[in-house]
Length: 319
Image 1 (tube, helix red, strand yellow):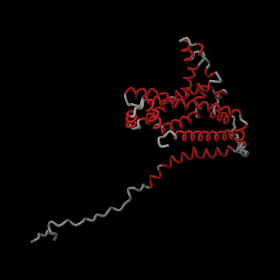
Image 2: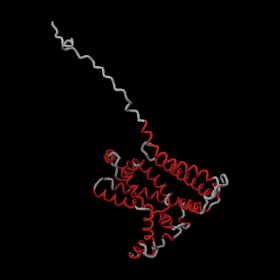
Image 3: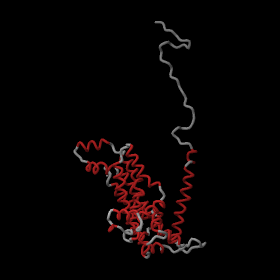
Image 4: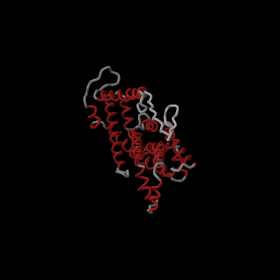
């Protein structure tokens, strides 16, 4: 049988020779360009300049009696910390107020924000409009909120007393911020109103990530609305709850401007919290002692946040 050769001398019908292609020499596309390592440098410098260095300075000042102006300071060791824990009634009073404030804010803000998120989870026009309405106070400044609610709480012409008087509930009228036993709780309610919309958005994002199949399966098993919330919604929102509680705790300890706006500068003892107490120490040139208070303040926030995180982890389905 004759075969026909191609001009190149190959038989027709034979498979083509494998073509060898060489990869162009160059950088591996999976390897990051060295220049990319330059991008974090500005943020790292800011972090070192405004957090790391001040923290180290705070630790150094905390073991001295520096007044903030003298070129030298005397080393006092742990005396400042001993005084904070054993000999400072003002600090203990501020700590007690702050714990009360934090408990009210964390419990109510978490509960209300979750309730709002449950009712406003769907992306309907009405839900989006209500979300925007509840979120609006968050964009206001703390000073503006403080002055608005100072008018609301005013014992003479405040909104609450006016409404109570108009509906014949005069016996419930009061001084509110003037009542030393209740003042810190009224400020806590203001804080809840201020930030509940912000925490609601976090919960909405968490709720929208829950698979609908879980609710359908629970409904088939005969679970009612409350059982669905208890066994599906609440456990599945544990990550969002951890974020809300941690952020709310930090907010509670940093309510400096809200306290000053409602209680004056300096605030009276019933409204004094840790941040205002530390500020008063710096204002009185007690830089060394106030630095020690600040370190205790940071450690306290870290400890409470860690306990909260461990508690919330027990709510997760895989815990």
